[in-house]
Structure formats: C-alpha cells, structure tokens
Amino acid sequence: MPEKEEGSIKDAPKGASAATQASIAGTTTLKRGAVGTIHGVFQSFSFVGPAADVAILLVGTVGFALLSTPLAVIFAWLIYGLWMITPYEFSKYKTNAGSYYAYSASSTTDGSLGPITLFSWMGENLTGQSFGILGLAGFLFAISSFISNIPYIWVVFAVIITVYMFVLPYLGIRISLSYVAITGIMEVLVLVIGAIIIIIRVGPGNSLTPFTIPAGALGGVFFGVVFSILDFTGLGTVTTVSEEIQEPRKKIRKALIIAWLISGVALIPTSYALMVGWINPIGGHAANLITNYASSPDPGLIVFRNYLGPIGFILLAIFTINSYFSYGVAKTNAVSRIWYSAARDGVVFPGSVSKLHPKHRTPANAMILWLGSSFVLDIILGLIFGPLTAGLVLLSMAGISIIFVHVFANTGLSFFSYSELRKRGESNVLYHFIAPIASSILGIIVVGYSLQSAFSAYISTPTTTNLAYLVAPILGVVWCLGLGGALTLYYRSKKSDILAKAGRYDAEAVAEA
Image (cartoon, rainbow, N blue to C red; front, side, top):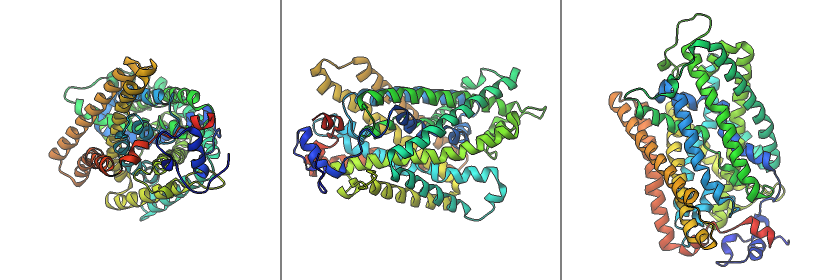
C-alpha cells in the first residue's frame, strides 16, 4: 500500500470505502498484526496493576468499606464483568483504537455519543494516572521512613516513572506488551500463592464476615466499590490495541474474558487474605483493628511479612514496584491510542496528535501530550496534599469518570443494536439491552452512594482532606455530564460533519479491502 505523509481519516468522505480510508490513512496507520492474544490479555491485566492495587487502591477501599472490603471487591469485579459485555460485543464489528470512544461515536448516525464519551474518558485519563505517578512515591514512603523524610523526593520518583512510561511504549507495542506479559504472570503467582498461605495460616480466624454488610454501612461499602472499580479499570483496554493485534475480531474477545478472570483470581482472594490476616496477626500479638488498616504504613506488606516472613515481604515489594511500572506502560499504550483515534477523527484534538513515529509506528505525540498534562496535575496536587492523599483524591474523580464512560458506551451498544444489528438479525435483547442497562444502573447507584458517603464524611469531619474527597467526585460528575454534554452540543451545532464520521474507521475492513 503506498504511504501518504499527510491527511487523516477525517478527510475521507462520509461512507468512504475501506480502500479509500486506507489510502488516506497512510503513515497514520498503526502497525497491524504486531501482537497476539497473550499480549492483549496483559495489556488489560497490567492496566489493573493488582500488586499496586494492594498498596494503594485497596487502602482506599478499606478506608470506607472496612472489613467488608472483599465484598466491595467482588461487587466491583462483577460490575466490571457486566461492563465487559459492551467491548466484547462491539469488538465483533469494529476494529478501532478509539475503543469506547469510537464504539459510542459510531453507534448513531450523528455521532452524538462520541464527544461526551471521549471527554469522560479524558477525565479518567488525566486523574487516573496519579495511581502510577503518585502511587509509587506513596508506596516507597510507606516502606521507608528514611525516604519519606527527604523533602520532595517523591517528585524525583514521579519523574522517573513518567519517563519510563514514555520510553517503553514509544519503542513499540510488541516490546512494551512482551515486558508486561512476562512480569504479569509472575505477579499473579506471587499474589495468589501468598494469599493461599495467609488464609491457611489464619486457620480458625477465617470467617464469612468480610462478605457481609454491617448495619448502616451500605454507603461506605459502595464508596469502597468506587475504589475497587478502579482496581479493575483497564480490563477493556485490550480494545485500544485492536488495530495492532492479530485477528482482532476473534482475539480481542478472548483476551477480554481471560483478563477479567485472572484479575478476579489475583485480587479477590488477596483482599480477603489481607483482611483476615490483619485482624488475626500471627504469633500471639494483639488483634489489629480494621479501622487502623488505612492509616498504617503499607498494611499489605505488613500482613505479607507477618505470615510469609522476609521472603514474602521482599517479593511483594518488588512486584508492587514493578506493578506501578507495568501499569504505567499499559496506561500509556491505551490512552495514547484513544487520543490518537480522536485526533484522527478531528474530535477535540488537533490532527498533529494523530501523527505516529515513522519507525516505531507508535502515537508519540499523543503520549507526550497526555503524560505532560498528567504529570503537571499530579505534581500540583501532590504539593498540596502529599503524594498518597493526592493520589486517592484524584482517583476518586477517576472512578466517577470511568463509570460514565461505561454508561455512555453501554448506551451506544443498545443504539447500535437497534439501528444496525436488528437489520442483520443479530440483535440480542439480553446482551445488547438488558445487560448494558443493568450495568449502567449499577454504576449510577455507585456514583450516588459515593457522593452521599463523601458528603457525610465531610459533614461529620470537615477537614481539608475530606473536602477534597467530596469535591473530586462532584468535579467528576460536572466534567462528564456538564462539560462533556456542552462539548457534544458544540459539535452537533458547529461541526456536525466531523461528528457524523467520528469512530467510523475500521482497521479490519481496511485490511480486507
């Protein structure tokens, strides 16, 4: 295929053939067939960052759900399982690096769901990265008082991980995903084997209490679910490499199922083991109160050290650090391709953001724009609240934002099924209507309880930190519904021609032309 230095898919006339799209795409086309199923699985799984979840997000969950944390994790995992139906179904028909944005945009003839879905995901993209940039510093602070006493050393850690997050994805999709696949398999083994040993050694201390909701604690458990949803955020991001994976319409669906199952295996038993291990310390020591878990210096490492000794402590520490780096790599892969796809369509971003590196075929411009923006935001909030608290505050907004992304994408699936699949006789009431609507309702319920819980926490204890925890989810709602809605209205009234073509590019159709 002849390559063309300029032009983008948005230049193609509406309804252009796959061959026309391909000729216009030129050097804006990602490298097809570069990765396989195992790479796709660990693009999604490494985005989850399970060992790093143990270090930071699980702390946030316990802070609200307390001993019911394993139940909150299960709720989040099941909700995310419902949410995986949408990318699973869409991936049968569409191969576009824009993922949920492209699915939503192309689900209707006028593309109205595209801008609001993209903007909501941008909210998560910009705030969710605090998990990597600030989370690593928070973790290292927790395991070393010497490090934590060095003024602003966390900024150095933030710079290091940000640079790493750029370099590996910049060099190529196969290089970056081979790295996360190898380390991801090892990470799962450490977590699962460690959890089994802890549970066995707890013995009679095991109980069903962590799987129940105490009276009056429903709001706290649901706010904990927001943090637990973030534990699984990214499971659908294999769809962002759909233009680069072999046999995308087959392997994307396979990777989605495997990644979802592995994430549950890695996190559910571990969350339970940490809860029972915390309240039943080995060696005859006095029982720890679960209310002290979130305020303790890295409680996950404490439990692993108590039950697995120095080896368990060291292994978890090593894989937690690596988990932040793996997450960062997977995050960069995903976000850069979402922004690249939107820029290719001419939505929100200028066309220059869709430009690829001429040798590595990676969206380098999108990487630089996103990482630079996220880094600045994280440093500002880190200076105000400290890295750990800033990370959790930003992640509370990220959780709200990603819920709305799924709500809009779920809605898009129903529209697409009604308008397109019904004509082909492929519309399915259960998968295309009932499941998406149910999962969206669950997501909205979680948002409601989260706002209520954050408001109650601030009223009872009006601290600056609790105010930040309240403001962040409110900003998430305003960002997604208010600003995202305004953006949609703008495109519908001023750029309807661009909007009508958004998300229409299909790499599989181009390859078959």
